[in-house]
Image (cartoon, rainbow, N blue to C red; front, top):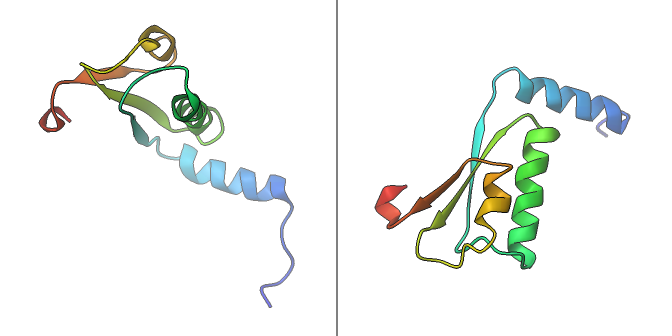
Length: 88
């Protein structure tokens, strides 16, 4: 066997210390910034990547998309609107 399973708090502290030792950036891309299911989930993932794991979250979306919730995202994360995939 693998031995006893450590308490969840110990696992969290270990993972947090690994991530916190060097801040990493994660980029979340979407086809639009709205209040629909996938965008809400992405917002939550980006938020928790920062608050729980210590990552820096960035959000990227096409400039010609429905970005009706741009301000909501931009109030919390750096948001970049791109014209083409080459802009990434």
